[in-house]
Length: 337
Image (cartoon, rainbow, N blue to C red; front, side, top):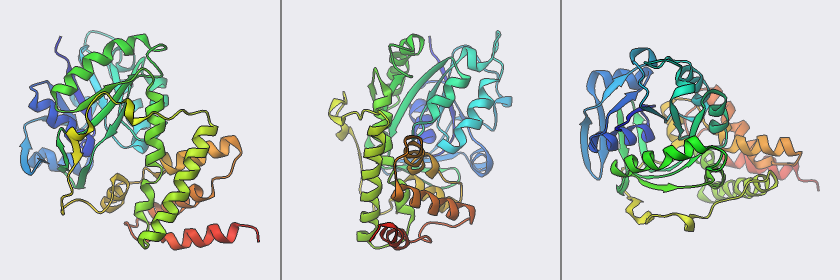
């Protein structure tokens, strides 16, 4: 059976998924909204990979109301973590042709950073597949995405959530989705317990917000080191086991990011602030703060970074306004003499 893929979100991950699926000749619909939808609807999605830019020939819609969902559809959720709860609730209640609603009939693949999306998805969907993505994508202008990995588009670790043992129906779907995404030029690792990979990626992603701060390389490295150390300690205390990249079943060199001079200054969090499109920090560094509070243990650096970026987002600030030096001074002042 040839499945149709509905890619929800047209940022870096969503655009790369759509591009690969179109290239593989697989049925795909791209779902976008706001300025990005307006740009794609008017001018197409401009996608650049390995120095070549093309306008994707892909169907695009602005909401599920514009679609008739089919029993063979697979939903690929590629929105940012902060947008996932609303998107999951909206899509889950949409009717499927032939009977039932999407949450009961269709599988969803969650592709968010952090530890929250899968848990929220299980509230709404019977069949949840967890995806941990690794991609160097630039998305600064609506409808324009550049992927710097090559020759493959990126890496995804896929697994039935919460595990193959506990989600048998989702586990049966994973090999089929994995095969299609490999045809779509992604490196895919099938994991029996995707929670370990989510914890591994969350450890790395906890430091992404630091790039939004202003400071010398030394100051940023000091804040990054404090946050990373806290994240490792807190997640381990919360019972999370970290996967080892040596377990990956593919050659990561097939999706190495290029060192293009046109590469963005920062990663996805920096780009979100540059676009003024919201902040994922509460699901990255903020996840460490949440876990620490649940355990009653301190996480002062993570707390300070999360608060600084929450204030920056509320003020509509771009990158480079809040200072790493202020965070370091605050941490030093809080240490008893």
